[in-house]
Length: 295
Image 1: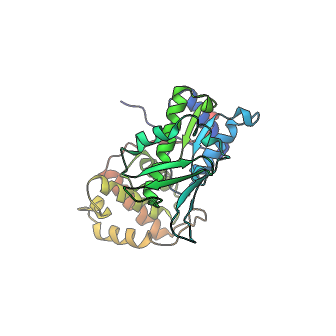
Image 2: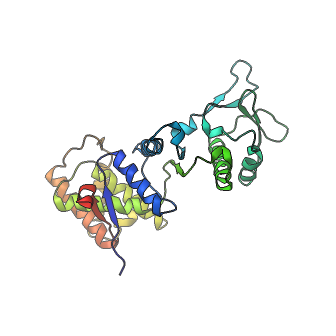
Image 3: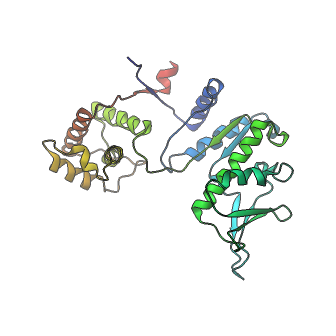
């Protein structure tokens, strides 16, 4: 029988960054999932800063997050509406090896797999222009731009693996991804553990209905349905539960200012969650606070 998975809880981002750094001593990679706005960028900055302890020359982390995205800024040539280019901040060490290491060729080797536009880097004024067919200086879409930036990152990672001197300071790569509307992953199962723990302790907040509905939607998606009602179909109180989830998950309940549910809603929440867990036998991970873990 497999051991139950364990969730560690941390008081602040510094302790979480320490845990990630310790894990990476023994592991090749760590995957961390969080909704947008939770703090992925702040964690990556905390991790990066710990790698710089001892001075700027001690840095060891290549990170790709919201700050990295800000190194690229569009100049849309509002005056003439012709010369649209993507400016890059050449002061960043992210671009150290661009010119001397023929990074354009490496970038294009990835880009051509996914896109049909080309690009050219101007190393005098530090901007990137894009072409498609016979049309020059086009503005690529947001999705194409994101893909292009990831191709740059992959090229830099390749140089790092090859031992390029310009990037020999990199010991860790840390990337933050935008939230996507996926089917259930461990994050959602972990959220179920939190809801069950709250139910068992009787500490149930109003925004928990939002979380529960989100989990039901992901589970339904996993089974090929676009309606969360799939998860409660056929149970005795299907209509009541459906109405409750529709109504109580649309309130403006803040995660940051939690409010206790009324007793009637608590009872309803417990019935829905218990029924869901009985119907779908999730192997829920154990919640473990950092204090308990280190005690």
